[in-house]
Length: 380
Figure 1: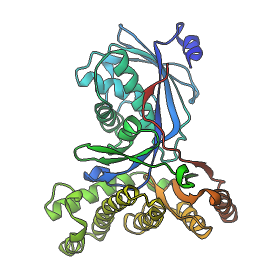
Figure 2: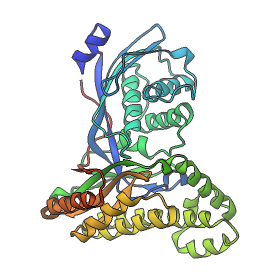
Figure 3: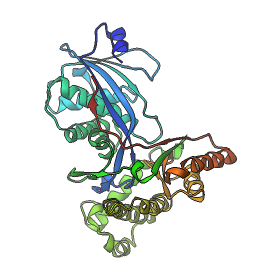
Figure 4: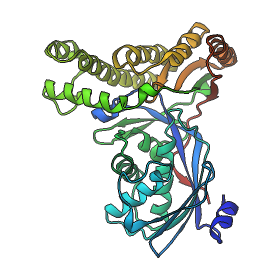
């Protein structure tokens, strides 16, 4: 990274930082409903070599995207003006300056091992690594959680993607060997030990390598439907509906569109599933998490309707081959699934999934273990 930076910009960088992608164990489409999520950071990271500038210039380069250095003016950054990769780090600079922080420019060289298009938050990793580097270099004194909020602001308002806070919080705040139990309303968090190796278990990520066009606009539509459900129920957000009161809430929604009722059922029940998983992990009963994952997938498939044939095939093939549980993770319509499996069965389950994809004529999936890793940090 340092050599590449010097070749681009003519001097060594002031430092090098890393921020990870994430996979979500449980709690999907709950973060924009003020609910609960439980992500863990992956060992795959976005890495940034960065130096400050005092002339207002922002120069960006990616080792992963063809093309040269992107030249921008920090004072002229405009929301929704660009949708390419550079919008993510540029949006962070914009968000920091909007918040009154004296960022006067930067030279940035980026490289990432987070798979793109796999639902593993490659964009959040770019945002958080940029925010972390600039926070350190400009001595802004912001906490990891504050950097995550600024990164989300960049993605929502500069890039124009209406994401919740989970991805950025996971990239900024996760701890090695733990899953992050996050309340997205007040951003309170707890690191929950998730040492699978000690229990002879593995969590596999299966990247289907597909993204269906049906996903375009689907996230925003479901967010709007959830907000409509909350309004109809007279609550600030769906997290305010206790799980025990879900049947009564659905009766009250009898006059609402059918999709709104389904979305409400998913969100309230998935918040409950997060609480179930927390209780199981606190009790040391990790294997019992498997059936909760399968229930979560059924809800995403049938109530939220964000799954797809490839994701359903992962879950079906994996559980048939002996996995303890599996579910799609992320926004859906492609992307990735997770599979909880005994260590001794990991190879056989992976083989069963790969063979099922071949038989169905799908692209060969990419399968790798999710090792709970640390959040954003300085490397050099």
